[in-house]
Length: 84
Image 1: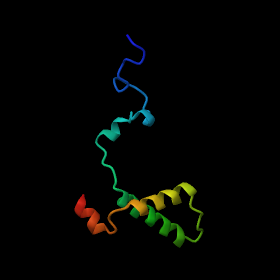
Image 2: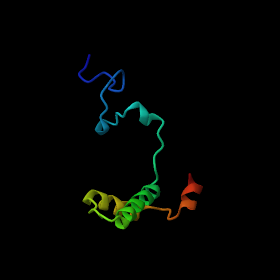
Image 3: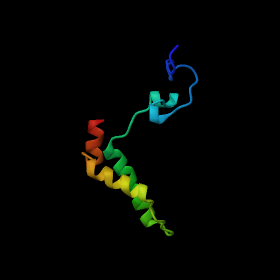
Image 4: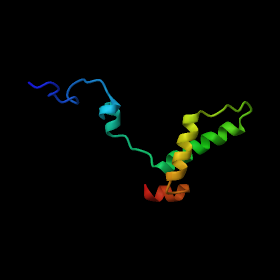
């Protein structure tokens, strides 16, 4: 038997996203469009800005928000719902 010859997805193997081995819950999960992610992040940002004790948003959050803004095709809920 060659080293690494067994299927890593067979049996109880620990998940490893770098090898695209995900938990069972992900098998039927639906993904979000970039536009949907952008709407969620924008809503979170607005909630933070309107809060009494506004907290600084992380660099990762801001980079993700900027990425989704750049690559979002659809700008409103109706359009997003129609492509779903």
